[in-house]
Length: 178
Image (spheres, rainbow, N blue to C red):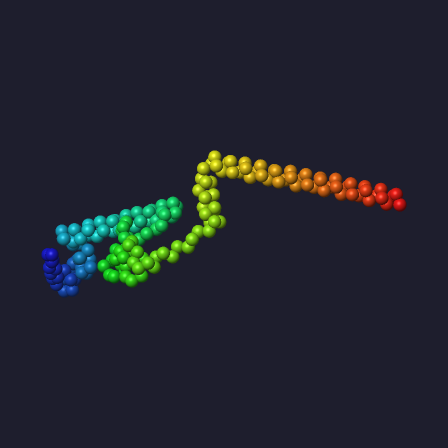
């Protein structure tokens, strides 16, 4: 890397120099007027590229996470295979003792509980409800079942009324006969 040498003369300082000398002769002003060296220009361009790459990477990661959240896929960190990268014992694929990396460690990762019948039915209904034809048929079936139970309840009520009316009539005739 090349260095620049700055020479400050007495006349440029403004102290003891000729009248009319520049009064803006501070070092910061002078350094701001200097053109960057080629190495410095390369470093600036490299830093800008890194910044753009980091921003792009961050935006891509955010978009991937959002897409996975919408589809219900798990949001993972690290490489495609084997989880997060790392050279330590805990950061490698299999992990340390009891770790549950891509290859399983020592069996600590099998903690998934069994699904109940209710959970399975709920999942199946959610899957089937994606199809509009199935959803319409299911609603039609539910309406028909409701109508049948309503008609059956109405018949039972009328039958109960008829039997209670007959019992009332029989009671009144027996009371009048006495």
